[in-house]
Amino acid sequence: MLQAGGLESLPADQQRLGRIMMEHEQYHNQFEIADLLHDHQYDFDSEVNPFVHIAFHEIIETQLESKEPIEVFQFYNAMKKNKISKHEIIHLTGFIFSHLLFEVFKKQAPFDNQRYKSLLRRCKDRKPHMIKPFLEREFS
Image (cartoon, rainbow, N blue to C red; front, side, top):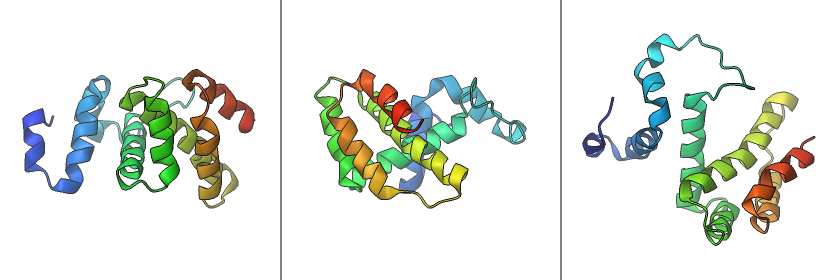
């Protein structure tokens, strides 16, 4: 497993991914045996796919860093005012993103970036604990 001090040895584009993986200690064993898990089908209702989880983290962190779409950055700042940690804000943003990504697979349609931006704008004024129920109603 990559050790924290070894991140600097990675190319710049892989350092973020390495840091995200290091932040998720609960998945370290699965990362270590990833080659043995390549055929494992994760049960959506009872298991978290650690590889998808990390990919979502990286997507959201990239959006935050680039401020593209700007609504991700605005949502982040609104949630910070609610005293939510960066990690939890990334999870909330990923929760919004995942609903739209699921629609891509379900409907075989392109990702709806305008709806993503709209949902981020509509969620930024909500209390964090109200975002998941709002999205469940929005996508039911």
